[in-house]
Length: 607
Image 1 (cartoon, rainbow, N blue to C red):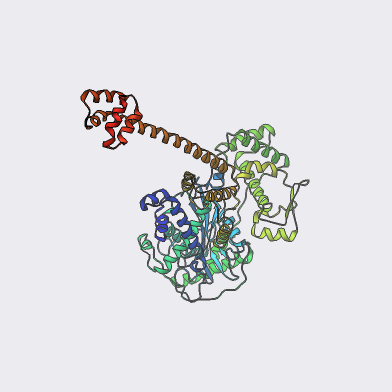
Image 2 (image 1 turned 90 degrees about the vertical axis):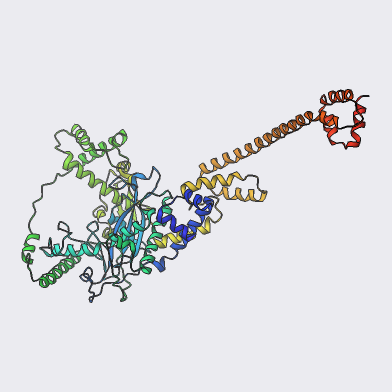
């Protein structure tokens, strides 16, 4: 079954195809597939890569610049199959239904940590904040860090590139001219190890390239299992044929081991000290590279002058409470009209112009334009609403909502600690937000909540609970969607079982709380009873037809039987045949008699 499991995940084979190829039932393959899947997940402590920092003596051109770096992280989208109600939350900016998977990779392209399950609409930084706040989540020891792209904040433990600088440069064609550009060039060369790891992962396992038809929970487990198998392949096959095929090569430079501390970063906090450390690192890297090449492209003083240039910002519009209330009122009109809400949770093109028209009608001479006033204000309200919703969510504690003042209430220490890892929440404590209930109608149901996101430890714990609580469940909740239908059909076609089996199934069925399943179960059971009655009637009708056919055959053979009886004249044979064909019972009795009694029976008919 291990080979069949690998065949399914590597070629994205459906359950119905596999059972036809191997001539086994779909229930067998579904049960064994999930058994192998669970077994692979239980090996996560052995197959996950342990992070090892880059040493100062490293000679790797990609990583020698980043001392104490543990690896790189990034997010990727993997298509999933969810219900129509959940699709707006899982819809990405490219209108695909996918889950946002966080992957943390070592220098040799092995996964250190993986967190699937977050909705595709969730930002990468939000997924990372959730990962480091979990009990068994991503651990970043003090003094160490991971490389990340510009989609993540440049905070302690996570080193991001400079924004607004060229990123993909090289030493010969387009050389860097400033420390920031050189830092981005080396950062890009090292950080893309996670992109290559994702490329190999999806190249090896075809089930991750398309939208599979498993439930979202099983799809997330498959993603975790594929990452573990990827690590096993990297560990046992130093030369990967697939990696050579895509023109990539990687050496294992993690032969030395160095212990790391037990103190870890528990949140992402942007600090001036970390920014200054990055600036110093960039200058140091640039000076080393410049001295080695013996060329000076742009001196450090010119870069400092360039970076400190004053930028004049356009004066922003100061929104009033009346303008905010009218804007929210117009947003509710858009939602209630049913014409402007798109399937991906946003509004259809042209909604800003419609809002501008309505607001100008409600507040004449306000001077509000679709761009940039209304657009930027909607983004601000949406950001604040999501920040408050996250604070009041079921997974947090220490926050409350004051109905009179319409604001978030919490102790200052709790709120300050929360704000370190959630910068959008800054300033919202005890600050009135009167439109929270109305904005819940506009943005609430499309907000990503990350309820399905689980790492390796959480997944294994959940599997153990399912094994303990649902060991006797009638329907295999790990089965694919198309296999659930088949297993339900097979379970009700064998209704003529023993009473003990029937009572056992009734006990299992009573555990299912889904009313739709109960209705379908009762309907199938009634249909089985009706089918049994109809089958019995058809059987009796068939027996009657068969008896009539056998009687007609015997009537055709009566005269042949009479010719074989000695002692009868031809006239007596004709008369006896006339009497026999008038009574089918006489014919049946004649054919049951021995030859020595047949003459006496015929003569008795003439009396």
